[in-house]
Image 1 (tube, helix red, strand yellow):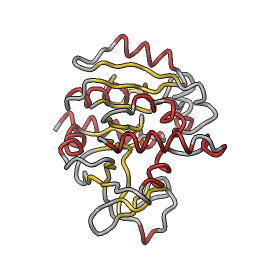
Image 2: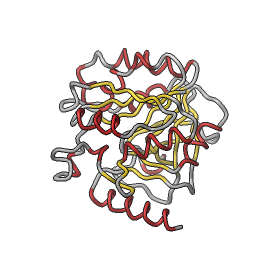
Image 3: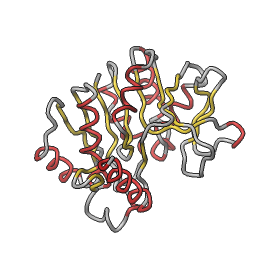
Length: 246
């Protein structure tokens, strides 16, 4: 299995830290960047290939990848020239040629302990499996998930009605067998609409769930974080420091 990491954005909510450095290169655990931490986790869990979709600060990302190779992991980059005027659905569409067999799809700002990825990889194989977490309350920025009684995904989006929310997506999905082609084909269809430039790829997963079984894998109790704001970054750094002392 390979991994596709969406790291084309600048991370404007983290300005001025991202004025010249893309969000994925901000240090989180000592001098380890978000991207370095993701690649390390992938390699430790047996993933052998990773494709990083880059955009803002692409040269800096490629320089770090060349300077800090990850043993056992072959890494390539794919440039998204539309990073400044589009959302992450376009990055996915640009990577569709890589979706001809099983793959993981990761948001470039999602960090997790190895056990999170291990649980996803060890779950019963499903064409599409969305990694989720459960908590007592969800805020406006959470990518919320609606589930049926068997844990299958019914809907996903930030604006789901509160009574329908059962979990949140952490930004890590596994596509296996027919799921890879189903997703790639749907990307090819929706990209033709003008509104596609401002859509998230998870809106495609939401549409697929209306006609296809989309499974979920819950990682409640395991460590992960999404870094969008300075507060998120500060919490992630504190978590990493605490985990290193434990």
